[in-house]
Image (cartoon, rainbow, N blue to C red; front, side, top):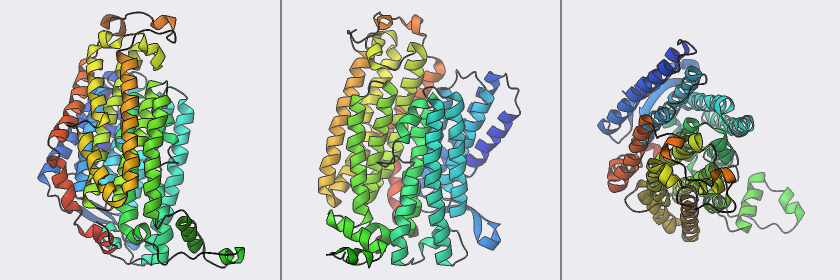
Length: 532
């Protein structure tokens, strides 16, 4: 049943290509009528499918290479499929004003959505990689054609980072296929294969980082703020809401599942070289082990956890200094995605489930924030500069936008009652059990996050005109002057606000799906390696 989410999305994109070019209204309607059934299938399938691993399509595709069209889902996949369905519908509602080449815009949009569904449901490595690329390619065109600030630069930077990461992933997948010699690309079958330890030592970081580039792992995050700012509203919502989740999902679904020993432990105690000859006479892996040991790292797991925490704190601190509203949200996404990667590295149930819940939570909250900035504010005020917005008193001019942003801000800060609180709390508890120091540092990132959120809230919606504000902004603007918030925008905002509130009040809706998945055969390797 869930496979229909893929087919419906691609069918909608095909229908859009047949529409007249100048009929923007028809394009919007077709896009919405495509996304709604996809969301309905995702919603029904999520809560009617058992939390264990469920295969619903497994057909030979390239038999000579052992490649199958294998679609399946566990509780983790179901959670992210549901996120994709919600984000897809909300993005279309917030793009209801698109007039320029609308049919092409929504065709690329639905192709991206179909690719995302495919990644979350693929359990054949080759098929997963194909869908992964299908999700990335439309992103370039959405930004390059319909973007705003330095759109060509933002699109090209995203493409370069993505394709370098994809090349790393492809090398790792092919290497695993060759080393296993099993003539299969099945993720389930390859997860059972005991890959040599030395192979896992280099294959794990290659594949993990290849995927994690798209998740905004520091220091490979620099594409994210630029891409967010350049992208049109719906594309920003998808980029932060679901595309970044593809990177995190691939990191654990492929890298951690296939190469658990490369993640968790070194093979031998690192040697201590005394002279240059010692370095030259040891393998590259041994030298890397020694270098990490010198700085107190015992495994790739430690390294990634540190990078994740740096991303949390760095993203929050840079967001605190930004003057562009959208850049603030862009850097905050880097910070919040750091919690996902940190949660994965805890290798305990509470931290890991918190990471998956954070993927869902951040997808909803970030999507709402980008919708407010890009559609409700920028398309009406024609500026994202906080100093200019400070003089517009948007709380009076756009009361619905102000209320929506207050809700989104509270959710983003992780206050109780919203999904972000449960997700980040679980990650911090899991991190405390595995990396107490890292947990404290991540907590500092949360405090800085509160600071930049309150700063933006005050400047953009509740500020008084200052000397830094431009003359054009030193006036009290009416709702009529800026244009009222449309019905589709209100519906989209309510959907996203209700989602983060429902999950915040009743997180078991998703946790009951996520936790049983950690006991599936796919995670057997991690359990044997002393994790989970």
